[in-house]
Image (cartoon, rainbow, N blue to C red; front, side):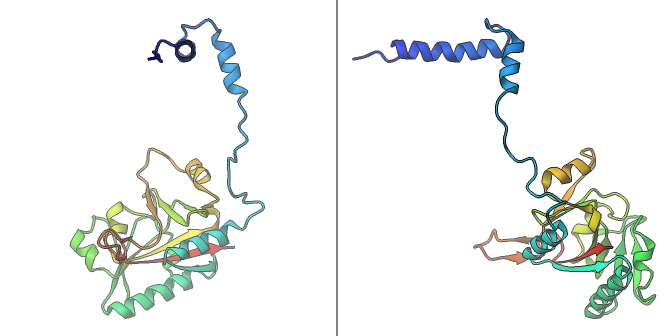
Length: 232
């Protein structure tokens, strides 16, 4: 029987592995600078971005991908944004009867300037209880960043976005995404975000298919996501 462990081939392979370990921990014969130079010289021809904003319509891509998640997506001009918010809120209020909407601190007041005064807009200071959030017609927020490639909206819960419960408990979420907040892909989006802040990523209405692969919406968050993309 051939002793493979003690064969010349095995010994050579072992020495190669040990040599690499010695080089990595600084105990080998090759200078550290030489190892670093070889590592730096390795070819890296991979793409650092999948979509170039200069050559791709990333706003259209974001709208398409977000709609794929069964979100309602509308593109409006910045000038028409208050009217669009008013229309969406009024339609939701009609469906809900005596309705009110939760509004986070820091939301631009001009977005709400045309909302019918009969529709109550309730701030979250002091924080609304979960049972109150569950009874509201919905929540209106902005966002921190949106990702075109994945159709994802990112909240960092800063001004105009509110705390996490504010966007998870209500059954309806109206979110405004400015065109300049749309990043081409995940690396582009992460470069714009502060990693020390809490981040919530939203990809369409909350849904699960855990039970017998039957899709159920509104389990871990809003049942309906309405996105207004504001453009020049």
